[in-house]
View 1 (cartoon, helix red, strand yellow):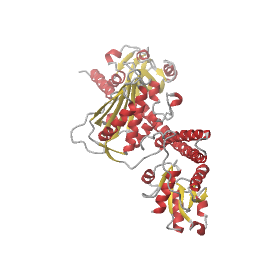
View 2 (view 1 turned 90 degrees about the vertical axis):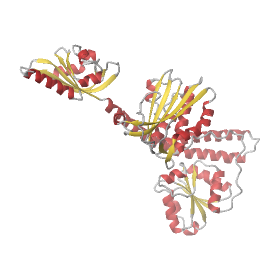
View 3 (view 1 turned 180 degrees about the vertical axis):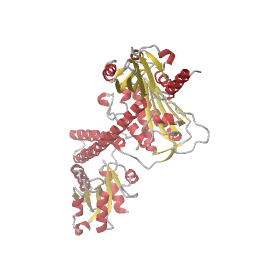
View 4 (view 1 turned 120 degrees about the vertical axis):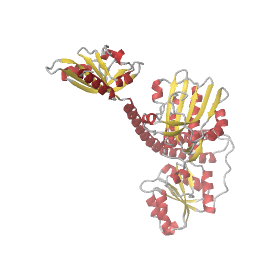
Length: 526
């Protein structure tokens, strides 16, 4: 082999060893070289590409500009770099970072152009995932704040309706209207619970769980939910365990089942499958929220109407819905939030007229044996328990506890509507009440008055100081003083987050007069 041939072989090997697509053209934009990375990126072999017009073959768009915008800049400046969108052989589009340079001979004669193109698919996907994650986090905080405020409003409405019903004769027409107002407000409680589930970081302390027995236990409930015209098919083959709260997993599956049922108004099939899978480093690298390793995969597939591509892109957005005024837009966003709380991943594949498949990957927590697991293949065939609606008006009411004694209750609550409602509840039940709108008011009570207090009923979250910190200061003055802590969140979640010690009495808002009276008696009589 002569020296010139050796040089050409060396240059070809050099170009083919680079991971970026390197393409060169003559002065008329006709392709004259096309390295191995270009073959992998675009789908055409070098033999097929060489001799083709570059911008015609790849149908190049320079950002939002016309096909030749970057070439015009190249002619004027001799170099251009930026993002372009190009079309692959299979018709799909790819975003690339392109660096174009004019090739000149020593005498400045232009002989062509060289393009070094880097695939931005992975970085664009990570960018979208980061943006989506940050947006979901921000909306979660907003949803949580709205839910807390809305919770207090609902408690005031429900409480006033309850008290008004007690003062109206059963034959009064207004009593029915009041009952309907209360019933509508209680329906709003289910929406608040969804908002809180979406916005919170964790539910109950996670435990090691196997998915298959949990899903088998849900089968009867799912069949009732889906109705007779939807066939439920299960293929449960996962042996590994996941670290989760059973309520979270149940809510994920139930929300997906409800979504599937609404997508099959004329009936169909819902398939739920589980499997242990292995995620390679390459597969994990395409997602921000995944690492290589073993996962339990859950697939929920329906034969419904499917979703258009623009709807799929927004499927997990909070408050996005295609159901008009009947939808809250929280079902799938809550699924997304709960899966992320479990350090998992969820994706959706849908085709109009074919159906929709949701794929969830949850990290393995337990061993499944030494045998190799099947590799995860994306694509199709790819909490609290859900809040239930209250009983309809007219059903027998819960029995009212026996009349209270004349103990004194100190109520500390910054929301005036909740504070008023709780005072009405307590006075209606026969308690004496001292109320305070903030912790500083309660801490300012003289010792003589504090000695008369039988129990403190305090909100957990208040401006300046938490209810638990306020109680610690009151307990230093009176060690035997007891308290019940009010919160929009369940007590076990407060314990899990470290905001409250285990064993302390709690009341989840909104609560009824009956549940308040029961909590007081349990605390005072123990």
